Length: 450
Image 1: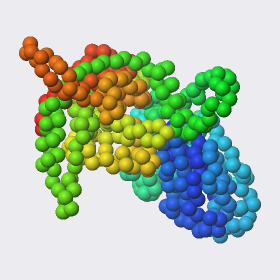
Image 2 (image 1 turned 135 degrees about the vertical axis):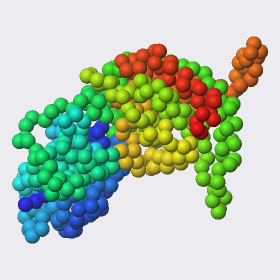
Image 3 (image 1 turned 45 degrees about the vertical axis):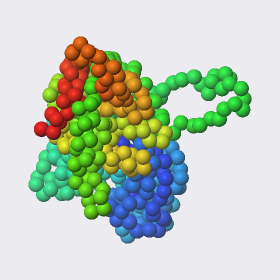
Image 4 (image 1 turned 120 degrees about the vertical axis):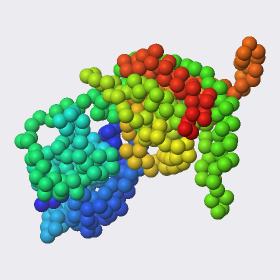
């Protein structure tokens, strides 16, 4: 029976993708784990691995095709011993994914075995466990679980971030894990489980209405790409559904700058003279915010309609500007990491972000975020909360200012930061407490080393 390969959902925000390149051709034999294509999403260009073995009978969507809907048929495999021509002739035309299909969390294909002309089955990325949390699983693990009658929600995955993979299903089969209940209507996911809840596309003035305001020939039209559409949708959703509250504070940087210089000067060097690390002010801001959230745990939360999600670690997202928009890679458990580890991790993330090579688990989730525009000379600004975060810290430029110390004027290097909060989860007093803790670490930076 032919095996349908469908457009995978490579992130929770993905609704469609561009099929950038096929790395196989019709007639090629492939096995599970082979990289078969490159898909461009709104955030990155990612490699897609085969889940099944077989022969590529037909490539339905050619390389270079843009706007392919999630779960649309993109290729057909002929299984072992199956006639390739017959499988190719029975391939269905590309079809859009069902509107309610949930996206899968990883860069893998989501094939579904079906009759030659049947629509590909929608991808189901996660089951709900008994405590209401999602159980993520690879497409291959989902298919094996379905064939074996294994309840995914009863499993603890051994893959990245607890993801259920093939060996977990095999272990469950041999270990007698509870079978899945008969199929029923899917349960609704808790609000906190969705990284990017569905939202209507942002509405603005129509093209015709806008263009009538400008002289013909005085402009050019640049169509929105997937990243810009996603950013617009999420920002509109955030400002419409989250009651923003803002708290600002000025931090004196002189002690931090002196410590940074001392640490950089003492960095071990390799044989070619390259230092093991080179700390930036932003690296120290990330660490200070993470420690502040550790000290004020009531602010390290996410809001849901039924409960407050209190996080055990400070996973700090850092806004990185890339062509066409921005992306927010995440420093996981930043309160536990050294400054040098944070610095080197951010350098790697920054490089791969600009190359659009980040993996979904490297930019999805997080408990807070930092947006630093100080290097652009911006003195003060307020950032938009990125759900499911309840806070985001906007960092301005460090600059010399005249201040008053002990009744006398003095010159100090000052930096203004503004905390934006989801007022449902972090109110004014709690936000002020968090900023006070942050200011304490910035102005007494030795506390970040102990």
